[in-house]
Length: 410
Image (cartoon, rainbow, N blue to C red; front, side):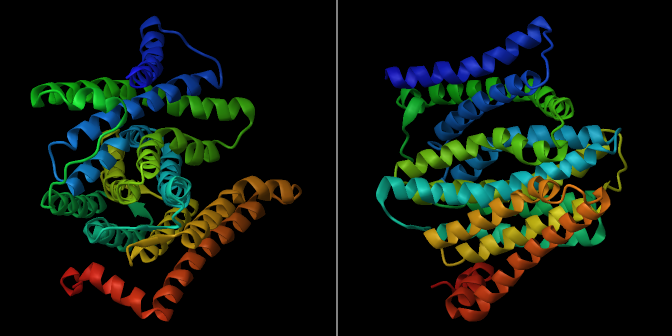
């Protein structure tokens, strides 16, 4: 009981500091101007996840995971939509919007999925997570969105009609999840304090959690995003790297926290399922929201034009997504597969950090061209691994067909 109360105090305390600073009109220096709102978003992430867990008592499990994943990525949406909105009047922010979106998506698969398996292994000593066939819903939606996403770098823009198509995929996914069987969830942690109350009481607490955390995210998204950019300039750190990797680490904290908690409780399916659903949300709804926010912020209704670097980032992200789907197509996730995802992610992450150090005398244009080749190489390697996987394994080929045509899965 005391531990649960302390967790509540901790989370709401992180949120409260941003409320106080905003009310007092205090302006902080470099570093602090990103750290304080970032911590507020982190605290809101806990509160959001608790509210979403309480909501699971009323809705089917697949829809509950979809809802939990959707709520968990709200901080990521807030930061990225701010960048897209601002890009409507300042086109340089398109660079930050795509960087944040691609970083968040690759971080989820490259780091989040392996970490879940590692946590599950330390809790149970089992080296493989086995998913229920019901997770076909998420995998099929992710497969459809991934195939479509390859067209975005080819045409060089994210347009309103892309939003429509991706929103249709997302809505169909939610409808399919809503039809799934309702399984009563096992709630632990601070939500236990509220789960035994009446339905009206639970709903009131859930709404309160959503309102408080939602407002905290709303007032923290802009100062966090701008604070990162200002800190990067003040410290001479690459702003693109901060926006692509550091910002998602803070804003993606909800789904990481929830997934790791599930894994340590030996709820492997729910743990990995939450991150898969988060990936579906980000690869459909998040991308779909960008051109809409861009247009509402004063940009062209024709959408966001992408430069060559942004196109390559999206291609690499789509290729990683394709490989990840093929890995999970047999509803199993092994330690070897987790290590492959982690190694490929961590080595590509180091490209913009290591190359300037290894080649300090290389002109900036040549260095950028070399980074482009490296990103394209990683994307091609992901696709090659995907093709090799289904070419060498009949079971994988059949599993992919079962995702597309579920009636064949007996």
